Amino acid sequence: MTISTEVLFSWARFATFLVAGLNLLFGIFSACWPGRSILLYEGLMARLNWQVEPIDEAREVRNTRLLATVLILLNLLVLGMLIRGRI
Image (tube, rainbow, N blue to C red; front, side, top):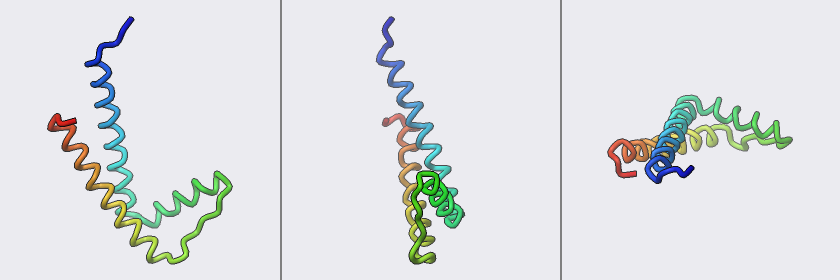
């Protein structure tokens, strides 16, 4: 039993669309609530037995919001390319 190339590409395209959509949602979450995003990261690191805490809270929130905005823009670009059929 062989899988055609078209089927593999359609699954890869779907997986890319799914990952880009989830990343877009995470970017929106981080841009709207950067404090919660930082707490989520601290909680994940605590489960791995790492203690992390921001040195400068205001700077950390600003950087989180900025990087979340970049994440949103990049994922909109990827989703746009997927919808237009360029990927």
